[in-house]
Length: 167
Image (cartoon, rainbow, N blue to C red; front, side, top):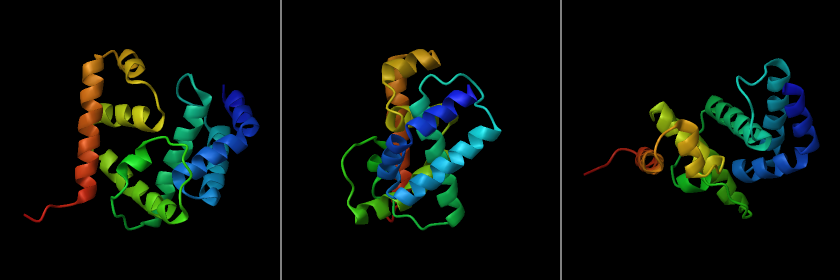
């Protein structure tokens, strides 16, 4: 399984780099986390079966990027939750890319505070683009609950990124 993922990463490197560059706002960061992903997979196999190699590799790379940004202790503004959580093929302006990279840490912090199921559903839906119907089947819960959990998770992240209210 690991050899197949590593081959997939090598064969589709350019596509993965482009998608990560778009999400992270930096070609250099995308290349670094793809390298780290390769190294990580070379040392440790995934815990379970991988149904979508591209989604798995992108998710792993984004998680590594979040860890890297967290280690750098960047200050965050919280302006672009939707931009970070949505998979999008539009070109990003360099200034927006810098803000998005910084906001990525804010989203990561907010998501850490979510209950595990809510966090997993939000990530799978918004970042990996997995349809909600598929998530309902995967987690053996109703479609209505999936929709509600994702909505609550999104609202929580937005609220966390806005910071304390000054009433």
